[in-house]
Image (cartoon, rainbow, N blue to C red; front, side, top):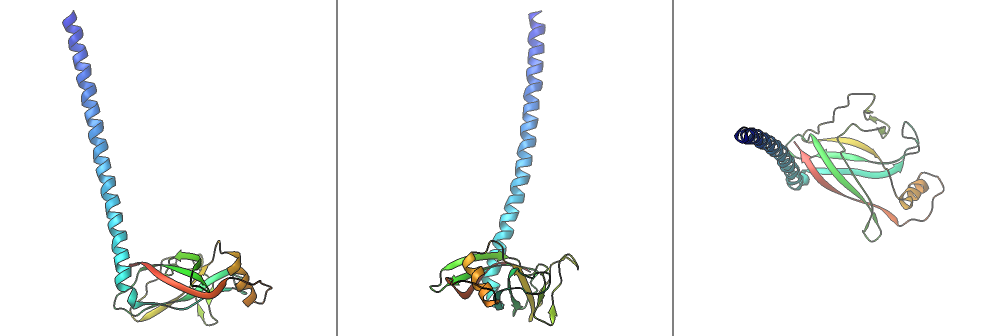
Length: 192
């Protein structure tokens, strides 16, 4: 009778141990799969940063400016606009840039990072319409070699000193600000 109980305990213990091993093995395989995905993502991000450093000499951000839109769907919104020019030899499918608003001493007052190739808002100038993302094809644009693309970005969480300067230039009453009207930009990542 004792031997029968010992045999049952040994059998149940063996089954429990086997189940624990199977669950641990499955957990380890899931961990390895997640780790591979994470490493692939880190590799892609590193490659984008290297592309940005190497290819940034072929990318120009021209006519960079900030203003209050007075007409159209962005009326009353502070926007950053400019033109991205690809002077290189490869198609650019994605671009991530950081624009800094500088004070008189060159210190950054405000930074905004965004993808200028995503469908833009409003229009640029009087003659060059830009697709509005919810009214047209929502796919991101591609900048071909030796071509350019205008962009427009709504400024969110912009400091009051910059907004007051933009309002003053738009004809609204504004105040004295530390912002000198200067910009600096940095290309953070590039995809081809």
